[in-house]
Image (cartoon, rainbow, N blue to C red; front, side):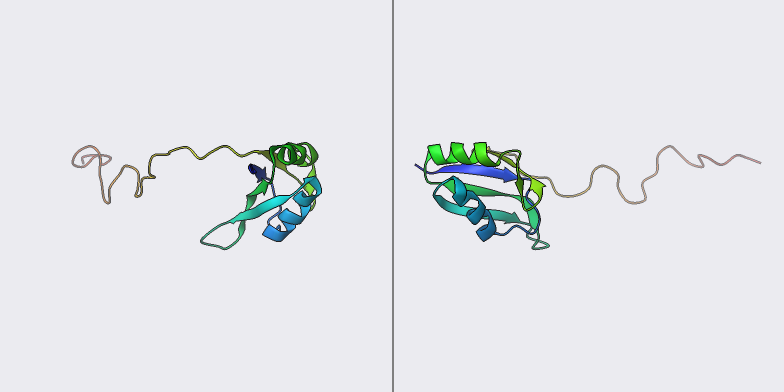
Length: 111
């Protein structure tokens, strides 16, 4: 059964193919993807590699975790399954427009 790895600390220039080529040294790579920012189209600096077997995945962790890929030290771990997260809230936090605290002429002295 295939085992998915998390790869963090990737250079922003790393491509899917580059990631796959690097991890092929540890065994049969079934897939490799660098996560891209939807807004900018730039790499987010991490990705996932799927190795064909658990043994190859463990070998890849041993080979690459803490070592350099394209000049940057990377972190490689067995990927954890995604957990349910509450939906993100949109909008501002707190105050409204033209909101005042206190009353009347606060801050102004009387003459």
